[in-house]
Length: 356
Image (cartoon, rainbow, N blue to C red; front, top):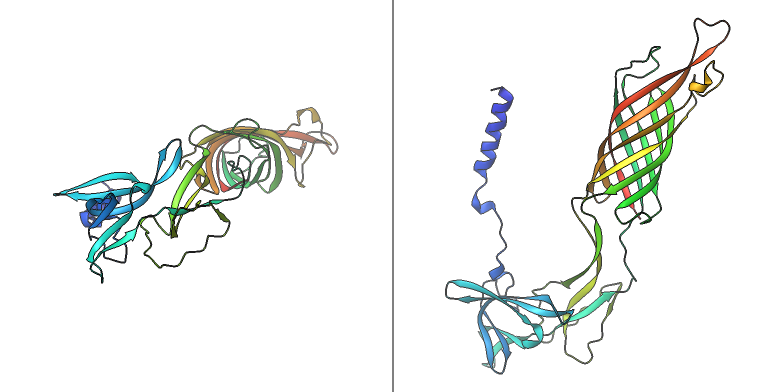
């Protein structure tokens, strides 16, 4: 076994040995929300349900949302102790009236916090749609192998450049397919080439969609005590009228549409087009003895993956056909001939992908 592999195995053993069970953080849902009134987490509560009934020995009472009658309604996610067990139940918020905790108050009555619905707010921004158009700016590096042309008009294995994709057509071909115009600057052995053409991308797994979301701010464990001042509505939101019903003025229930993106959204792509020339010696079709042999184009394909919300990486194949005029050494007079270089190359691209 080589020294490298010995060191690698030793490093893995050290890392595993240093990872103790105490370092693994688990969410304690049984004590997730402490009692109101800044009492330390772990204190027990009674949830007053009504008609003198209560759910006793509650360890956590948290705001949540449930679906009923084809609509979302506010509710309570309650954990409570029975012997050595921690049990859970979910109640409509309207079925509870108060949380009792902490013994007796100054007047000798139990300390209670009213349980009221959070103030409901929503964002006024119109319909929301996933961004299906994009602009991509991608540096690339390509490996084309050894120069095998007869007059050695190729390059030394590697060529590189910068590619621009503009896909303004939205969901013209469907939600998973993007059609883009492509242009690039390509440097091969100091000669500037300008590929232009088309690009087709198909996201075959994952994707984006609009979903209804909800959350509570400042948090689902918040229940205000009597006398607390109302909080101001966050900028950009509108409050739903409470129709005279008492609400908790310090908690907001926000429901709105958001774009949900799969974390794994691989795609395949196809590309092709023509190749124009920059200014360099030997560029163009004429003058040459064999202009009919002139023709520059490319085609390719590959697979890619978004690695951040604004970045993609892809690996693929590209075929190129390039021309270069060179003097004819055996021809009389000042004569040039067209030479052709066909390239089969591996392509690595990493760059910015900006949806709109």
